[in-house]
Image 1 (cartoon, rainbow, N blue to C red):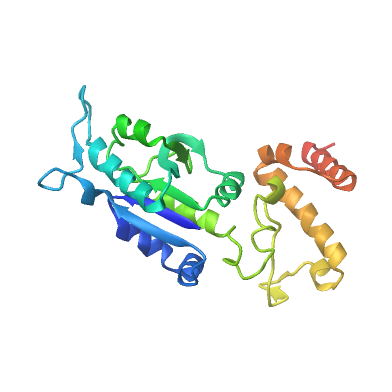
Image 2 (image 1 turned 180 degrees about the vertical axis):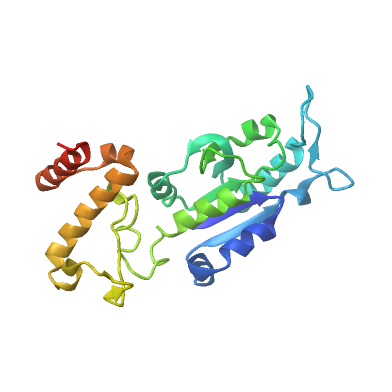
Length: 247
């Protein structure tokens, strides 16, 4: 899969993605991250890419010309009109299901804004989808772009060593991930749950599923509505509800 990042700070993007799992995926040719410096496309003689907004207001605004011309170069490089995501707190919240959808793309363009944002005309001409990683404001779109690339890359076949690693994780089937343990069996007086030492894989899977339901109910109950339960799991869920309500 090819990621194309339009940014004023390409080194910031490369620095984060050049390590760990994404770094190995890039090295193995499983994903490719192309960065485009928007500043390279400005026609302003001093290299400026921002100016004061019409109508007044605080801060500076990224100009339409360098952003749009940068996009045209990206589009030409890809050879067709690509899907473009604009990193914006006004956008649709990025989720695991969105990551799974984006992982089906061959090329994905991520536009990183700065200052007070980008001239609306550039966004309209490009045809961007606004995407947010949370209800807060950052200094630029580079961090959200890196988050999306990381989340999507994990879903590309071969990026993770274990074939099931990307499947049985937090938010799979709408539930949070079950608690996990490693050696030693006892640490600071706390023991690994006996079921995990039993060797009974069926019981282990059942325990893990129940723990996912319990943890989701405790920490993110709003996610329960998106989950699908068997009759046995539904009975366990109602038992947890009874305990929680003190019945």
